[in-house]
Image 1 (tube, rainbow, N blue to C red):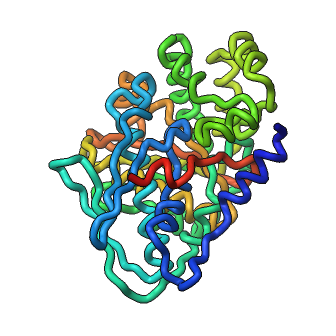
Image 2: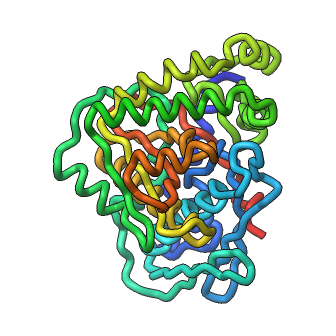
Length: 338
């Protein structure tokens, strides 16, 4: 099974859906939700339809305790999926509002009929991806930066856009420190390896995880991929790649929150998703470089460098113009609709 088969599956998945009567069913809405970002492409969500509402819940069986011990990224992923679902509902004529249910740690999305409003962000949903390639480093205009900042603003969540070379180099140093802390951690390495799909057959069978070519690696048999990881898997090599990627970016976006709790983590995910969709609509690429916020010992130092005080830095995203990369897959809606 070749990369071309994987590419065909990804292309079919990422086509816009047009319901026959113009009104979507729950399967259509959840399809758009599943195209959201998630850590390691774990897709740690389930969706449950109620009367004029949808519940978005965490699937803790898909958590990553080594890289995400407090489930921050998991709940941010729920926010990403929620934002996609709201944008899709709006495009098909359902105004949606969402609220955090503290008693159950779930998100409730309520719907009411209204005018169909198809936005540029909705149109960008099938195109958005985490683009793990080198960007061209060209500066963004003031208007582009303001559009990105506006998209990422949220309730108790803000975005800091960093463009100057000196501060980007400092961010690269923090990312390198994060790699230096993570790579020797056997549990972290084993967890990452468990989510890598070394070839198209694995990726299509699972519908999740990190397909090798998405990350710039070749499509190879699993035994060869695992061997290559043992030989080439090192912080030093990853640091060289990450530093080049960061310095080649046009901007680094830091999404940060007023409070360190699940409701803000969800909101941070919603803000990231809008940022990434806005970037996609503008012909820009995005990719996570989250190491400084994943290593607990680094996080307060990173916050101090950013000048955000006691606020939590949630997500770190590089932005720029670069080539398209192979797109990741998703599990079918039937696997996540309960």
